[in-house]
Length: 148
Image 1 (spheres, rainbow, N blue to C red):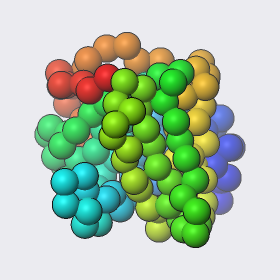
Image 2: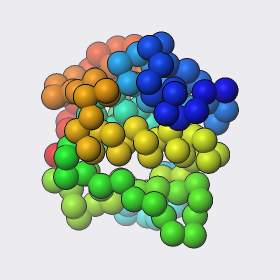
Image 3: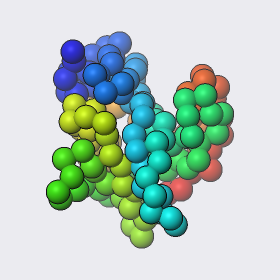
């Protein structure tokens, strides 16, 4: 199976054991568990990183994301002490809001952390997105309310 680094660099992408998928242009998508902000319960969410836009959905066939945010150079991706599967993302401009995620496996977690850190570092390997349009999991381009 591909490693997180090789999956990100592969021209056609790949699928990791945890179900995360890397598509062309650096698209990363798959199921993660996300902690709620207002009510700190954990829910499965379908998450997509397309260029610099991180969005999460109720499921892969959802037409609209629950939330989408643009990541930038001042975004932070943090390890969670005591939780090998957890990581947190603090998008640029939303310093008061930290998004907490958990992966189903170490390989999947590493894929997401590597991809998010590359975007936060301004890597051009992942297709930059300055648009407020995103292709939803069902392949439909949609306008987003971006939080940045």
